[in-house]
Length: 413
Ligand code: SF4
Image 1 (cartoon, rainbow, N blue to C red):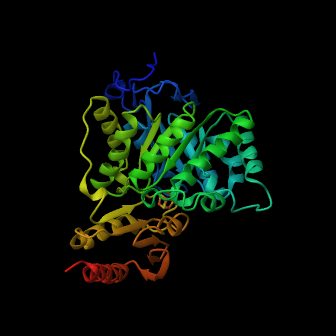
Image 2 (tube, rainbow, N blue to C red):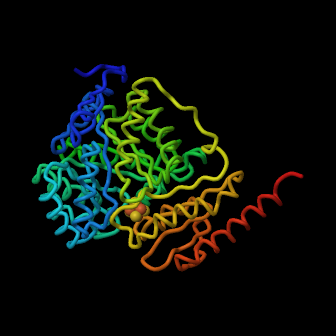
Image 3 (cartoon, helix red, strand yellow):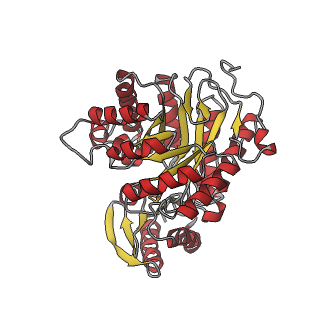
């Protein structure tokens, strides 16, 4: 039975006894409606569903099957797989056949028309409203959404409207530019974009959808989800802090956001995005479970200092779009190299690919995004250059030194 208000009820520990069963918790948000995706039920006061994502190259079928199975066995109720092209779709179809027990989700990027090919093989599809403008510019976003909805309905799929603060629809970003306090820059555009797309789906009579609003800054995740939940309590929410980075900081940033939202009954499903070696991807699910269990038991952590000051390293959790697996190693090396900069308020972003890397690094003081042979280095939105994997750390260190020298010079004597 769903509770009206209280999020703290009993825990479903079936997963402890049955590895591979979806790990869910009885933390309720009774007002949201029910959305079915494969064998999981999201929203409507049902237990929170923990999700995860394969970081393997989708066309590496053995590795993707292995990782999807690992995530499912760890308790991921939904396992996301990245698909960018027709070859990925063919690989997805094979993975689907070999991991029939997992509920699969695909994330559409710029090419929304791929939904037609992926929907037959998955239980849920995510689209990003901020990516719809890339193709068929003469066509309205609403018409593109109608196509996605048609395919989802035809193939028994749920949808996620997945808005990212870093890649919000440019028209919406322009409209709400300056609307937020600087610390929450972009939140209004993110929320309005989500609301706009909810109205598109509602107008089409499609209610089998959830919404996510993500950013690497937990404050924006909290603010966005709070505002949205107040405006549309009926729509199930998928929580996430993007590019949370490596452990332990990545888990802490995520926890900051999730504690505040879950404790208020906001959040029906969630994913923890961590940069992890492939063999340890299951830890995303474990961290998600742990946060939910702690909130449910009333165990909260204090907000760590780095959220407001000090060095902040954000790094993406990696996915099949990573073109050079040296990315994960690079993220760890960046953290090691920049240890000396801990006292300074500096953000370094390390992203795994050219799809989201260029945009998602704009707000960082220094950004790295990885290509097949080179790593692109940015100073804020400005490009510094492309460097070999074994050369980029030295250049990054030089940039970091320059920023620190400038900060020291500006500091009061
Ligand atoms: S930045 Fe690129 S590689 Fe990293 S998770 Fe996002 S899409 Fe995948």
